[in-house]
Length: 367
Image (cartoon, rainbow, N blue to C red):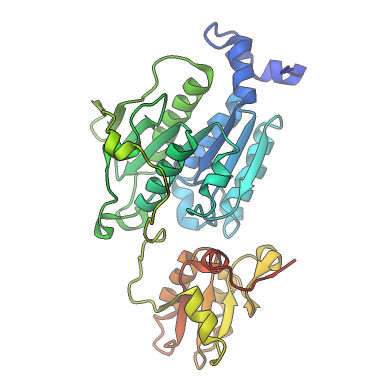
């Protein structure tokens, strides 16, 4: 039996006096378990509104770290959070926003190896990702797990919202059957995005999630809402279920999750590095935060992003140096910055970061 404390009853008063929600609907929200994938532009407003609404258990899946360029739109974070894990910081701040919510932090990359095991603990999945490989993985894992999916996407000044895999409705592959070519996978860092746009789309996603949980209104299943914020135009197109693309039985290959924004940076795979280290000398520099490095690392030394940028002499230019981060993106950006000085010619990025090293089941030093 779901029981509310006096504080909860006061907090959710505006829901409780809505006849369409009331105590019955608020109980459904408290009992719900929702996974939000991505604590970025879309994930921040989704997480904030679901937390405020009283969704009882919220999972946060994100392997990235707060960067200063995020603060233009990811308003859950502040300057003091730069360099820290998004999922962890989000859970702390959201816990302060509503102490009655249980947060589960998944500070890891979503992969085909862990997606199904993570999804099974939740009732509803919300996609706050920003790339096609992740969207297709999320969709396919939702189909196999039979979980409804609230989808959101943004592009410059335009956004999209839909609900997939809901009560045998269309899936994401009914809208986009196959993953686009990598040349079409442009990120916000390459094309830009209006700062308020993810807030608008994220709020719509949270709204759909609350409707699904409480059984309110008409869900955006079989429909794609398209919003143009420059012209303030809202259009809805219908999506029909395609049995040929909807019936996913197994997870497949989804390509590179980290779009290669720096094509000139030399990269080395986890397995290649492991084999080369048997006969060659490489200096490994892990640029993650010290507390994360202490939890698990490969070897070598730990130097934070800030330390390296302020003291480039920490990175020797006369040795083979491999920079390591969680997923390969931050280390790639640091190498791009360092290589503005021509003396740095022997820098390598660990492709896929330490998460790929772990996925290959290579030796790891951990607490």
